[in-house]
Image 1 (cartoon, rainbow, N blue to C red):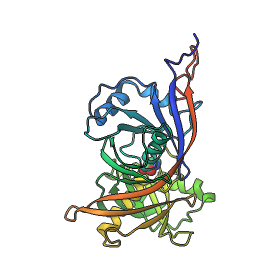
Image 2 (image 1 turned 90 degrees about the horizontal axis):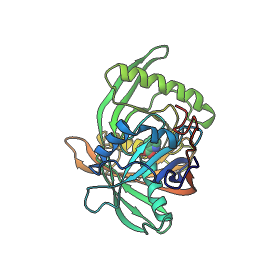
Image 3 (image 1 turned 135 degrees about the vertical axis):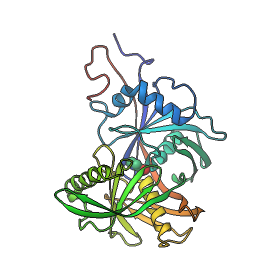
Length: 314
Ligand code: PYC
């Protein structure tokens, strides 16, 4: 049987500061029309093969983050979005949301100005500028634990903070590693060992590990390396990771409300960020992240009858 337009999955690819997003415009099953969180559950429990078809080889690759446009019940929201990767599903995704906004602009579905997008973990506000910059106001972020010491077998003790920025992060400053591209193999291996030890030592929720170090470019405050859940590193400075960092800076009184923080990623690309307090008692802030995405491709992903990898290599 020939693949038909009815079975094709229409996607638009973009990258944000080097990190790719594949936005799914159509071709996924209907997910019940409830909240975005409940649609995520239905996608995960009943149709997970659509995620692997879109992201896994041979149609995708490990670095891609998927963003499925879906209905929303939230008043005033342009769309709902469910983010997913090679390992499963994300709560929010900063670079991904910026990619979705650039994609909707490319499609003519939005113009410069303000808007709102619903995610499984809350509504994100954004402003698209005429130059293409996107400022997103993320979901509430906060530090959950300071100076957590992890005993990493074969390596030793590592100390860091656990924080939520739309996903769970372990943020480490004192790691002794060089945050350069030529070192990503070692950084990936070490952060994976830290995550495994941390998960076993009472923090199973943490699926991203973030190393911080001095920036390489003037005007920036910090450089990071971010391990994502599926064992690959974020090419961007990570929007939710920068949000978690801002929550820690706020909790430490190391950055004033409204002051801009320039976060450089491992490629040298950068996001700027700032925060507003929601509740000082709880350490809760709403971070703002500014970045830019570029549309790179538009495609219809096909599944031909008899293709052993119609749903991806799993
Ligand atoms: O930008 O939030 C982000 C993100 C999460 C995982 C990859 N990128």
